[in-house]
Amino acid sequence: MGSGSRRLEALVGIEAFRSLSAERALVARLTESFKAPREQLEERIIESIEELKAAQKKLSSLQSGLLMQKIPASLESSTSVAGHRFVVLEFGEVSDGNDLRAVAQEAINKIGSESAVVVLTAVTGGKPLIAVATTDAARSTGAKAGDLVRTASAVLGGGGGGKPDYAQGGGTNVNALPAAVQAIREALH
Image (cartoon, rainbow, N blue to C red):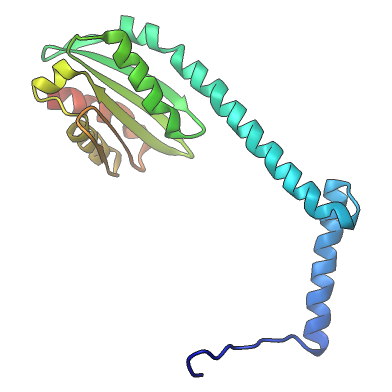
């Protein structure tokens, strides 16, 4: 075919009938599922998608609030590693990793001017996530979040990176999260 030509495909005969039949069966299943007449089906599907998006947004907001509640206990149980306050927040399963940055920033804000490294771990969709945030004082002594996340992500069988103040990564081996945190601890020495 030459430039500007279009290929036309058509269904004829029995194939056309099968295709039409399949489409009608699909529409019938959808009208049954949405309990809506055929004429209102598109509108009902769009409404359902919008409701789902709103519910996901509300769930994310609730999850973010629950994650923030873990900060005080994690700050209290922090340890000292090579002159840095070493804070670990373990979240287990989360719907996505988007909230980790906000939680890390909140922890850093509560720490203030102290030299600190904050490590956050989570699992989403069966895959491990790790994030690191550092204070100005920690960065001035060479503790850079991007480098620390790359070290941890390698242990997780993946990759990651970011800036000196915040970085995030992940991998494939959920069981290696404790070893990834330990790798960060050792990298600080």
